[in-house]
Length: 93
Image: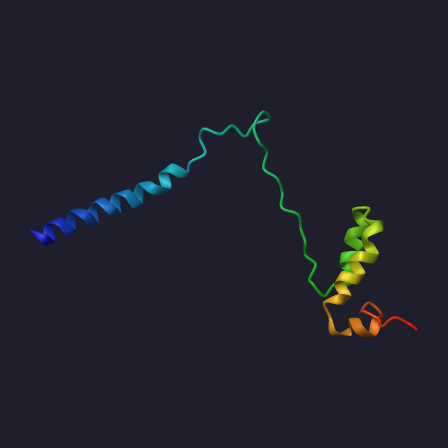
C-alpha cells in the first residue's frame, strides 16, 4: 500500500513538473507597434582596468563634468593612487 501511494505521488509530481514550462508562454502579449518592444543590451566590453576606455565612453555620452570624479574614483581603488596625488594629504602648516 505504501509503495502504491509513493508511486501516485511521484506520478503526480512528474506531471506537474512537466506542465510547469507550459505556463511560460507569451501568446497573450502583443509585441507589435502598440506593445512593448525588445531592447538591446548595451555592449560594455570595457574591463575594470581600462581607464582610458571608460573616459572615452563617458565622453561619448557627454559626461565631461564627471571625468575628474571618474578619475579620482578609478585611481582610489588601486595601490598606486597614493603616488598620483588622489590620496588624503596632511594639512600644510
